[in-house]
Image (cartoon, rainbow, N blue to C red; front, side, top):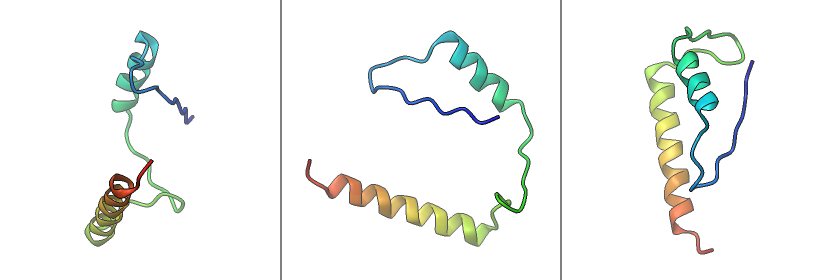
Length: 62
């Protein structure tokens, strides 16, 4: 089951949310055809894309 929670910058997670995160860290990662394990080349490309995205975010004026 996937849960998505959006926190406000100043909002602290609840004890229940922290417990859920701690439980999730104990689970094994399950890869499948929709979410395959990344090869080193795929991981490098992903990191570069995220870095470029973050650079663009920081350059935009609000």
